[in-house]
Length: 128
Image (tube, rainbow, N blue to C red; front, side, top):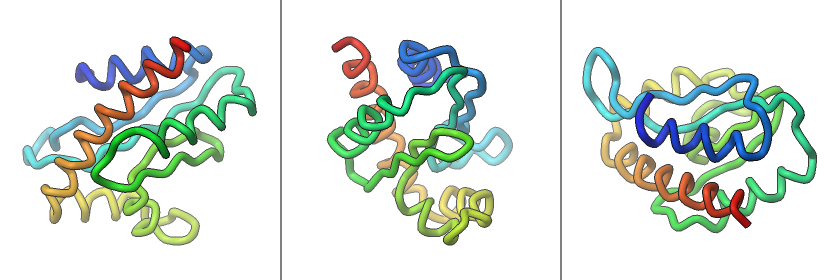
């Protein structure tokens, strides 16, 4: 687990126990190219009131790309471009991750910098 993943998981766990957590590595493990960052997780006992905090962090953290916070079965912080390219129901999520990661390293680099800023904002959010 990368340092950013450890920091992110720790910041999220200050809200509640994390039942499930998933985020791609910074670089593809086989081919070495940068990957588009995102995080998905599930809390053991999620609270509706936390959604506003996550929406604020995603909206207000300094960024070079647009980000989205979504809640379904899992909670998710993801670049908006990835949501758009995944299709209306998100059925093409894996394909969009692969396409963006393989074809747009500049976007991935900017998004990874943004993710580090979002992690910092989450760390501040849970301290307040």
